[in-house]
Image 1: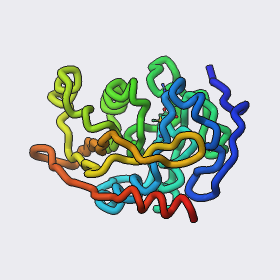
Image 2: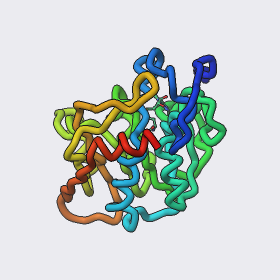
Image 3: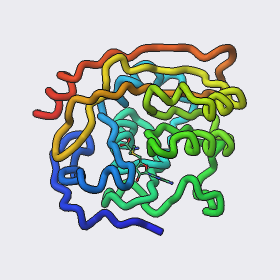
Length: 216
Ligand SMILES: C[S@@+](CC[C@H](N)C(=O)[O-])C[C@H]1O[C@@H](n2cnc3c(N)ncnc32)[C@H](O)[C@@H]1O
């Protein structure tokens, strides 16, 4: 069932999908909605763009469209879906990525997935995408995603291709603005074209950079 979030008083700043995000603080934890700082997506694409095998991308937990907007700007065609309704015409609401009984509206073999899945269900999200046979999957996760027995089993079955570690904590959005974060994040990538052990890369981004962009 679609969970309507339209009653939230969205007000907005106008760059990169920040629209409709103010006053979201009271609901964001409930629905596991933590928008991705657009700069983090841009920094990831800068390093990884040439390796993404399709121009068709599936964002199955798109939220208010923060990743989607950056992907569009980079020239990708994006199918954006989410369980909840963030009142963004680009994002189809009411689609539960984890519900195997829900028929898929797209061919998973022809799309790459680039997403920031709900933190509480990130392992299930990755496993579902892998079992669907998506040829390229990139997920923004907390760094601790790499260390757990449950995920070690997943990594044994589906070895990682690349990991991009954000050297500085990513900012998070709360009460109308981006705030300095304290958690470390990384992009984990499964790429069918990759052979050999996983490669490690680092992305160095300054919080002040986000801050500057926000105030424009
Ligand atoms: C961490 S937020 C990220 C939002 C967006 N990907 C971004 O990067 O800005 C996770 C999103 O997952 C959505 N979500 C939670 N459970 C879901 C499910 N079972 N199927 C699809 N989306 C889900 C939430 O509504 C939320 O928008």
